[in-house]
Length: 233
Ligand SMILES: Nc1ncnc2c1ncn2[C@@H]1O[C@H](COP(=O)(O)OP(=O)(O)OP(=O)(O)O)[C@@H](O)[C@H]1O
Image (tube, rainbow, N blue to C red; front, side, top):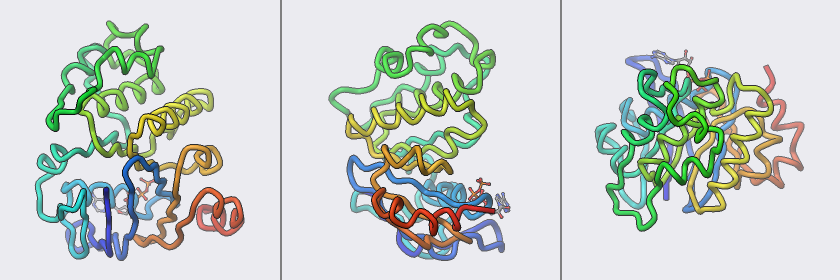
């Protein structure tokens, strides 16, 4: 579904990505891991057309995305939950969801607010609340709900559990597991590999703008020390 090949890029003259290589198959969940500042968010921005790719290719369902605007890329089926959530603070939970609704590719069973509330029952109870009054965890759930309302082919979660209480993190990971069960393709950027072993199909370590290690959950378990060394400060 998605193939990122030898991607390089960065900001103005500052090169951040040197050689990013990874892929996501239909229905797969992959995890990009790496210490802070290694280029994971920059990779997402470049894939989505928010930053230009200097070299290399981003191919989505057989089509090259290089050079397309962010709006075109998003319409093509990418749903981004950005770092820091970014819900509309002055809309209610329900309004946040409804304003995001889109089914441009004519999915047979599109997401509805009802389905989002089934996924996150806690949000249902807050349907009429202003988004800025929600807890961090509820805002994260709402941000995921908003992205799902666009019926994305590929959902991208950038640091979806950062700064959240452990119990809320568990809920987010459980949600990723449920979405995987529904056949949703997902890229997760997260540091908590151990908890993701149950929900991800493949892991990539990003170091200084390069994908330097990749493996299945089995390989992560077998080479745990090596993977931990990549991630430790
Ligand atoms: N707008 C910007 N202009 C210039 N440099 C930037 C900009 N945004 C990020 N960078 C730099 O790019 C590098 C990679 O940052 P990026 O956010 O992609 O890392 P990351 O792996 O996602 O880490 P984090 O977990 O901290 O978000 C860092 O050195 C950062 O300082």
